[in-house]
Image 1 (cartoon, one colour):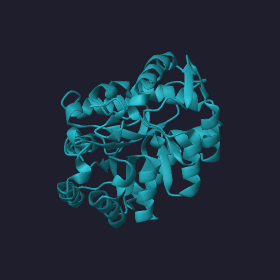
Image 2 (cartoon, helix red, strand yellow):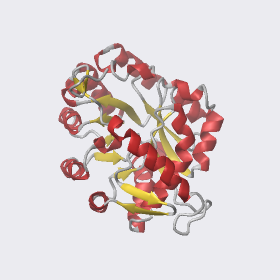
Image 3 (cartoon, one colour):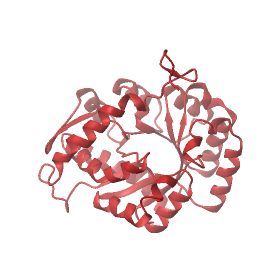
Image 4 (cartoon, helix red, strand yellow):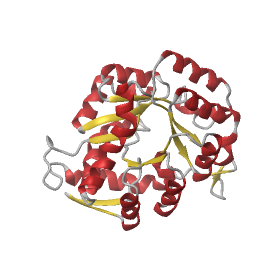
Length: 303
């Protein structure tokens, strides 16, 4: 429950809610105008998309079977997708259906209800260790951690497991929590979910400070405006993309089952604003960064 001070249980309300109305309006309404072509690209020749942020949790696979979910991904023109789920069975179902497309990521949550409790539940460690012994993954995440909670024992063990297993970390965090994880392991590789819902200036500061930090743009709409078949990138974000073309990736974030039916439109919307960037930068953000950092090592067996 949110109290009068704008906090929930004494903690700041997570920024995702602040973006919800604007993101839904921008990604839902504006993307609809980019259905056929994006600056001369047909559906067959569209810019490939590496989606760095998909979930296929228990409430999703109950409504959308794996074959139908994969059909959505292929219709969107996804070259590859990083998928995690609550619980992990969803990821395994989707990977079994499309191993050429799905890159498995291990989420700490056994159900969606553990988002707010996992950091203080030591049984999570046993769950992670059991899944890591049974299946192969390229990362641990997406998990939610904020501020000094990143120094709690469960989170510390997650960082250790990633180091031991040569896995990346997909961290839905503020900048403070990201920095704490790097203090625990300076060589960690962190994909910063939603670019921390932070400003482009602060994101650039973090990228300058940590060479092993990458950012996804999932569930954000502030970096671009799309109108019909044309898109434009917000100036401050443009500076960030041009300074760090090799550090950003797109993502849909199917955190509810309904968002699975938006994967196609999100890919079209992404192509529209990416077309406002130099072609090499657009290709890097759209798919080359994810392919280089995650897909190629995965398929080469060097995780």
